Length: 189
Image 1 (cartoon, rainbow, N blue to C red):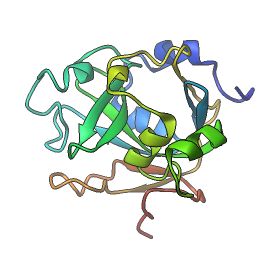
Image 2 (tube, rainbow, N blue to C red; image 1 turned 60 degrees about the horizontal axis):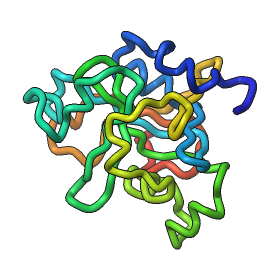
Image 3 (cartoon, helix red, strand yellow; image 1 turned 90 degrees about the vertical axis):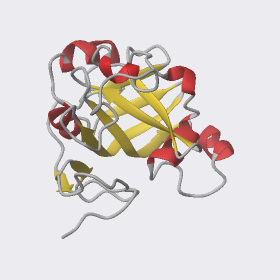
Image 4 (cartoon, one colour; image 1 turned 180 degrees about the horizontal axis):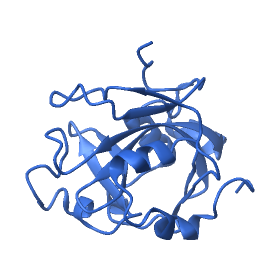
């Protein structure tokens, strides 16, 4: 892990008590590793308990139970019955969707999982390239199978409304790394 990132085992302690919007901003430029593959997080979206677009808005269910669990753990769900999506739990009932990654580790392996050049630009593609599993739901980002290393300084951001949702579309809770290529969709100017 680069020297400008905190080592993964400290990640859970570093984000304790952090809300999803703050965490979504902080994760831009962070290093994400999953079983030998990874890269730099370049796009996120925040979801809170009060947010009608959030899976936690109506309370805990068997599907969203991990969102109500400890900070620094994964919330993994299947979107439209097809793609898995990777989220990082912030405070209980709050999570951050990882939308895009600039891959730089395990590229050959990722290419065997995704047969096109768009390896990690979208939550479904990212999860497929990283070989995310539904059994990763609830797992900690502790550096064993999954780890996140936060950068020492905040990365330059672009901010805009979330995409792919039908409620609370106006909230500016989608964050991207300024100047990055490989975002799931461009940001409004």
